[in-house]
Length: 228
Image (cartoon, rainbow, N blue to C red; front, side, top):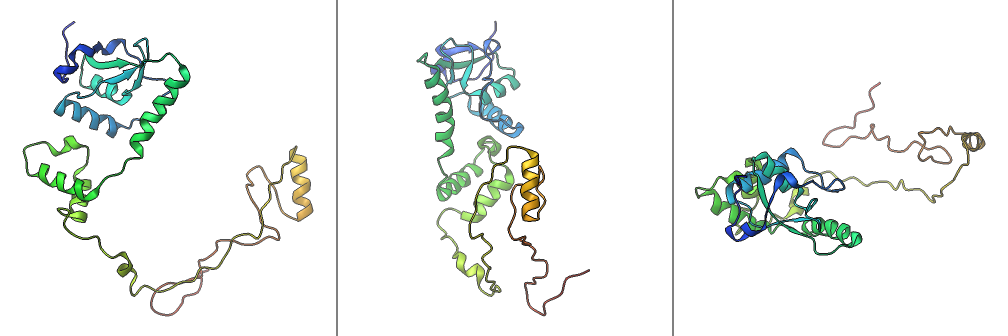
C-alpha cells in the first residue's frame, strides 16, 4: 500500500495502517466538527509530531481518537502510534481519563499567548492552523495587546452603578423525604396542603413564592409598577 501521511521522520518507524484501527467506543471525550477540523488543519500544516496511543494489541485507539478521525478526513493511510505497555484494564482506563484530564487542568498565560499570536500574525503562517478563530484572536490581542499593558481595574467598572441589597431567600433547613409509592407521595402532599407530582423536585413549607422580582426596577428615574 502506498503511504499517504505527513509525520516527523523520526516517527516513521512507528507507522501503522489507519484502516486497521478502531476508535475507542468507550472514549469519554467528544470531538466536535470544529475540534476535528482544527486537528486536521494542524496535521496538514505541521505534520504529526507525536504518536497516538493504542491498546496493547495495537487495534483500539486509547489517546488520539480525534487525531485518527482528522487523519482519515485528510485521506491519510498511516499514522504513528505506540501500544500501551500494560495489560491491566484498570490501568488502561485510568490512564485514558488522566491523559485527557491533565491537559484540561492547564491554563493559558494570556500575556504570553498574546505575544506569540502577535508574532505569528506578522508572518506567513496560516494563522488558522493554531486553532483560534479570527474573532478569538482579535479578542486576545485587543484585551492583552503585546503583553505590556496592565490589567484594567475591574472595580472601576462598577462606579456609578446603582446599589442593590439582596434579600436572603435561603431556607432555614432542608430535609430529604423518601416515598415508597405514588400513593405515599400523594398522602404527604395532602397532609401539607401541596401537590406532589412526578415533576416535583422541591417545595417550601409553608408555601412561598420564590424568585418573583418583576416588580423591581433598576436605573435612574421612578420605579415602574407591574404591567397587567
